[in-house]
Amino acid sequence: MSIKEQLYEARKLIQEKQYEEARDLLETIDHPKAKEWLGQLNVRLAQRASTQSARKSPSSKPAKKTKAKSSRSNYLIPVVAMVLLLVVVGVVAVVVLPGLNNVATVATGEPQAVVNDDSDDNGNDASTSDTDSNENDEDTTDDISTTTSSGDIVGSGVRTLLPDDGTYLFNVELPDGYTCECDISSNQVYGEDSSTNFRIQFAQRAFDPDYYLDKTIDEMLANDIREDETLAGQETMQVNGRDVVIARVADEDNDVEISYNVKDSDGHIVRVIIPSYINDPETLHEAAMFVAGNVEGELGEAVEEFFTAMTSERVSYDEATDTWFFADLDSAKLNSIMVLEGWTFESGIVPTLVKDGDRDTSATSITSQSRKVFLDDGETLLQWVTAFYANSGEDVESEEVVTVGDNREVVIRQEYDGDVDQRTLNFYFVDSDGDFMVAIVQPFVENPAVHREDILAMIATVESEDVRWEDQLRRAGYGD
Image (cartoon, rainbow, N blue to C red; front, side):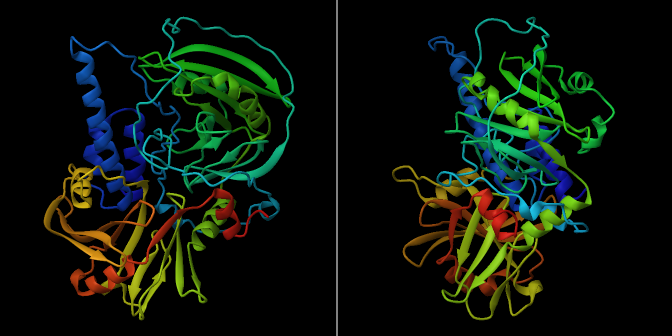
């Protein structure tokens, strides 16, 4: 099974709340994204365990169990991607997607972090958040109704391209005031703030949107609902000549997720999903209907060129400032670094630093980890890293802390993964505004310590900034 397939499987397990199985799998995957997810999953499991313990205390007032619930469709997010898609880069381009270069993109508001510590399972990561939901006290599981109404949703917006699972695209017009906070593998559409968001995904089985081409939306819903879920309500509305089936699905905790299910012009079922943690989902009704009325899914060879173009623009050099820029599209970051003489960047699944063109003796990747580090009073970066990776399953053979540049701490650890018999030299550090980053000398490098001082000197110059999806499109030659 390839790394991509293993990451997909891990995301599926997290989506299905099989957290222990997901953790076991992630511990066997030698990949920065797997390490990131594993750390987030362990932190989240510890938080859930602490919460459950508090609920069992006789002196504690019972609290509602709330959480950010992932969608049931097999988009398998992120879970990354989140992601996850570091490996989608291997896609080979064949045909240009018609009209892509003429697609305008939304560009409103200030950049926001695409992935944060409390993002849901659909996010550029695999965390399993416990946040406020729209849970009701009354039991809704028997409240199943089917009504039909029609009407046009009036609105306007700008067409853009949104990714789905790093393999497919949506060509969609977003309503005015909405923009996508995306990474290359997943999308999250925001209104005014994080309390008004939804996602767009294909209904699919085994990563195959064609699975439901010859099936009705009702058949899809019947197949898609898990054993611990119940269809709590269903109605059909029309917009722009399309039937939109609005389904309300309650899980065992009575948290309700709302999905707007529609067939695009090719017959693929597209889902606009409002997660269960949205407190007032009805405020998103018009926006969800607007999207359902115009969204078109894109699949096949034409889409491969899009992702190839996006990933081929990951590395660039600014001669005026002697600075390399390397985009981490899986965490929606644009990183910068000043490299030493003899070193350069090579593009690939992860942009890689190489000395004198010899990957075998020097290949070192630097990646953003989609989180900020905020140390408690008296806490050191070494303590934070140790706690974050406490259950990674790797043996720490040596570790030290050094300071580089303008008082930047770097935790250096040599780690051994006995499951795959691999040893890596890892450099953990935080940039000037708190972005957590990791430089990893690749396991096939026989003497990783030989370039230690060079790597530390370059780490002193690294910065990571959020990059909007619209800007990523422009870098790759799409949009205005």
